[in-house]
Length: 281
Image 1 (cartoon, rainbow, N blue to C red):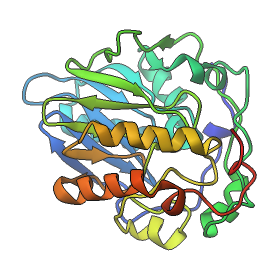
Image 2: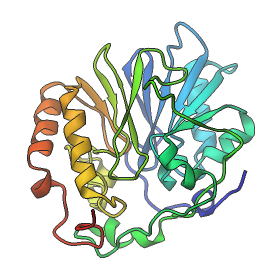
Image 3: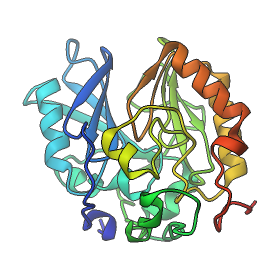
Image 4: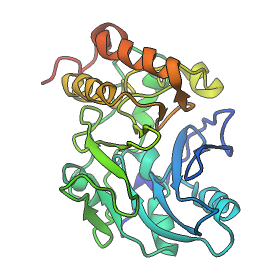
C-alpha cells in the first residue's frame, strides 16, 4: 500500500463534535473525527462484527478503533470498509486501518483511479465563491493513495457487502464515483458528501456544527449538474434519517423540507456564483 499526503497531513480544524458519536438506529452509529463523520454498521447487541463506512481524517485511526472497541467490545471484528468516495477526509486513516485489519474495501469503479495510485484528484478550487475554508482548501491533499490489494468494486446489483438490506446509489458530482447508501427499513440514508448538513466552506459553521442542509462542499465539487441530479435522486428516496460526511444527522420534517428545498432550488442555494468548476459539464 502506498501512502500519500492524504495520510501525512493534519488540518488545524476540529469541530465541537469531534470524538463524539450518536446512534441513529441500533445498528448505525455516526462517529465524528475532527470535521468528518465515519459510520459503524452493526448491532453490538447481536454481534461483534461490523462494517466501517469511510475512514475519516488523517491520523484518526486510534480514535476510530477505540470507538469501535467501546461499541463492539475489545474482540470486535471489522469485516469490510465501504467508501462513499476517496477524498482525503474520507480515506485519511484507511491505510493505517488496513495495516491492522486485512479486510476488503469496496468503492465505485469510477473512484478506482484515486484509490490505486493512478490519478490524483483535481486541485481544490480556492477561487470559488465561499468562506474561509474554501480559501484555504489549496492545502488539502489530493494525491491518490494505493490500496489495490484490498480494493473491490461494489456489486453491480446494488447490494452492499456486509450490510444486508442496504443498497448503494451512484451519486456523482462531488466526485465521479461518489455513492450514497440507503436502507428501506427505517428509510436511513448515508449520503457522504452528495449533500451535507453544515455549510462546509464556512469556518464558523464547521467548527460550531451549525445544522442545515447544504449542497456538497464547493471547493472540491467538479460537476455541478451531476451534483444537482444526485440531490434530486436522493430526495426521491424520501429518507427519514440522513447522515452525511460533515455535520449532524437530520431527521423527520426538517430533513424532508430541507432536502426538497435543496433539490428545487439547487442553482440558487448550492451552486457558487463563480469558480473554475462552476460552468464545466
